[in-house]
Length: 390
Image (cartoon, rainbow, N blue to C red; front, side, top):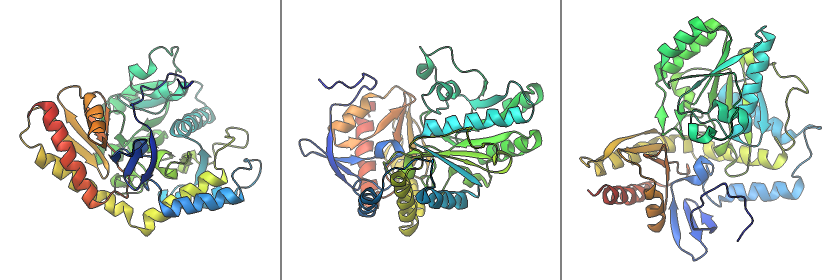
């Protein structure tokens, strides 16, 4: 038996190689990948431009540390700042690290405003990571159980509920920031209304709070915009990224603008591996290919086609609650727990995920073809119909 710590209930399959949206196991069986490493493999598997860029960079330089300038990090920071209309970028290695940076930044900002016990508003059903601070911000008791005492300084409200935030604004003078996901991924593909995000921006401006958006899962062109909050036409003070940014190479980023820019000074925060040349070349290549191949518009169009196909194929089927999502971030909510569908999909050569107990989650690579999208719909409709006994 391998000596891996028992932290995952792994499925009984190991993959040896992949191509585009296909993966192949040790027996040579082919699978259609509709999960993309949980929204990570933006360019699918074995993308020629990414493979070439990584091999070339590995042959030059992998790591030097942030004790020195890293030109690749400078280039990617400029690119991200331009795409997001933000001012500063801190690089790390994961989504929870990016959110840790955001939480630290908000607390430091609060102290600079003279607030001794700064508080951050977070949402029910949120997921921000598994470090102690980010799991405390997360709205899932199953993730938190057994790790008490949790980190204090978080105030929780229902997702997409403006009235609850207005109430806190009137009653809690310690609030310094709001942290939320424009689309909750782990929470079940729950989408914040544009009006909610716009009103949140207004409240944050009035109260001088930081508006902090967690785009770890929904960012990097997945919803048909570079970042999901852009659909609402707002500009956050802090934004966190990871997952799809490096197409499989670990990289995270915390961006700051407005009131949040300039809060961190040398010595306030750091990361040994953050922004190393290899990870930054992965990020730069990912952004280049998204632009060159118009993958953002493709994600919007294909996502709509997949949702329409699922709604049509499952029309009138008892047990279906809703098909929802934006771009290639899709949830199919059923009226009963459906974790069994993951193994059934695996048996049928389809990689999917179930989250929030009753929601089938699809996060395909942005390079998925129209034909593969149709194949995904047909396979999933058949699986769900069989599962529901339709």
